[in-house]
Length: 390
Ligand SMILES: [Ca+2]
Image (cartoon, rainbow, N blue to C red):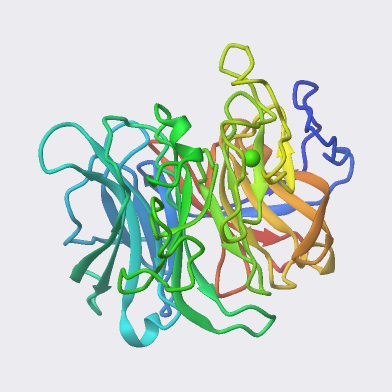
């Protein structure tokens, strides 16, 4: 189904902190092609080399869809999950060598053996050629400690590459980890995995060059800390790791986490407590803590993150960053001062007419953008350039 969509005007209530939303009159149009619907709270999308799709559903299902969107299978062989609140089956990514090794990585809310506690975990498995089930399941990482909470799992996985424009996969994975909502003070401590980004090898071991490897009192998987709840992450073509994270009431951020750096939560933030009131000392800057590349007040509740590396939508979009908004139901096209880098220059609202929470955004092998909408009748939508043939 094709629907003509244009850019909406900007509701007065939405004031981006840096006031970079472009005027709605600039009609930059895309058409939407609904590939699949009836997905239950889909969270993440992956592309298989044969054109099929993998979609996670938060309730704990991994769905295999045909290239035309037709449901083919519910993939068997997932581990037990704590599917409640924000938890369940969350991200999925295919290995860069998937065509040969059939390996994928996924993260989810892992229950404790007994009791109500849970935490984010990252596992690898191989997908059988018919796509019916997972084999060789291995839990590579479990966030510590587990706590009884159904919120702030983080859970975006990025396969890293060697630095530089022609970097190769380097055998390592990044994983974003939330503060579990009730444990925000933990984000400033290195003896736990709450509010962190971790970096592990694909076999679950710890890279020897991790910033805290071998340091007393610090967990060796930690790459960066002081994060709140990152639900979007990607790699720029030059190998730089980008992520965003939810602020509290206001103060969602884009960060480019460097090894060992402290991104400030909860000591500094551009947000406030839900219902008002400052967090901690109410500071937004502090020596030794990183400033975000960009922040949003009010919060857009970001989820999903992708760079556009294709020219399918013209030169103006090449090198832009795309982020879904759960709260205001649009896809944010973010212009940067340089393709794939620099500062945020301007933002554009896309898909506002769809009226659905955007949970994930990815660029497909065809160079087109795909989004997942988060509802009990979630959709997989392909964005078509307006000038494309009918
Ligand atoms: Ca921060």
